[in-house]
Image (cartoon, rainbow, N blue to C red; front, side, top):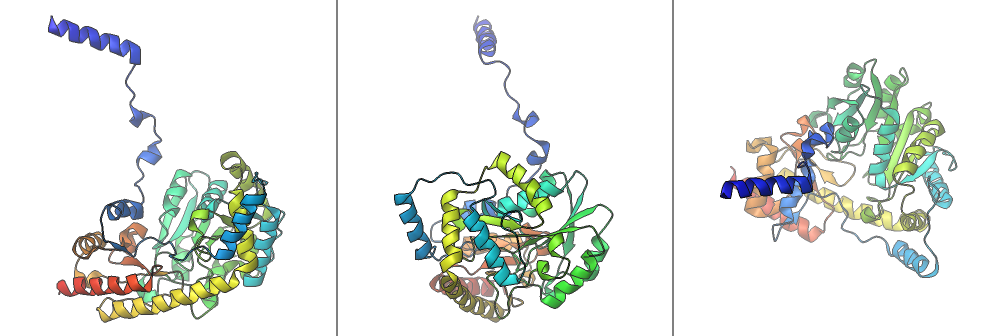
Length: 408
């Protein structure tokens, strides 16, 4: 009798709720096969641990400059915040055009060659999806920002990696680029100053890359989100070279230099023939970048050069301190001249990158990022961010020194 009642209830319940859902048959196969961000996975653990000094997240510790915050407060009090055009507030686009002309001496038409995006990340996604057909090849330079590969793969593209080395200060070798190009190559992604290594490419370095690209029909994404944060020399964009504006899409934003990460405001500048198609995709998925953030960015470009210069000098002090401390510990480390990361070699500890990070966190409550998450050639390295207070950096280096000493 009991078995009969259980069976009867099961049949009745099934009639009510229908067939039980099997989500594995519904969710995109590509998405199911994709790992979560190696950075975020690790920092989910960090956020649950008290007393941790984090040298992992690439987020400035400085407040957004007061002029920007004050401008937004006054606008919120007095004005209604409405949608902008899909490509962005024209005053912002004009400001970006003027800014790029002053920094890299390349002129962009604000009406047709620039669009505002939800951070630099949306700009990367839009660019890749607008250019890549299934089977197209995209060359990335590793160690590389963790988002490039997933975006390319979700667009149906094939990733071609070029490994760089500490011996070359993680710069792109022209011969390696030549060897990587095939008839299927559609796009090259350059990211200098680089995340995670802090490497830069000089004018001389880039000129050799330009010579190769100009013999092809390849487009270049130049991710220049850290372009304001270079030390000892000015940033050079590949778009500056003769004939390269037509082959380049510059991606940047306000998160890093202006300490505006949460505002989520970026932009892309490039040929109008490509931007016009990117706007179509943008208008169907996002509509427009946040209006209030666009207003904030206008003020940033208009009045915050002094604040950006001050923050860069503070980063430079921290950079010198961290590099010096790592070398004194016996960790091989080239001197990075861009962004706010150092990429020390930890192979002398005979640990994998993941193991080093996990044991350091457990033993000393200091969080750094495994180099492995940035590509195969990142194994044996860790990313150390110095965009936190000098007080925290001093304490973190003290703990790291003690940890490294315990391994000898």
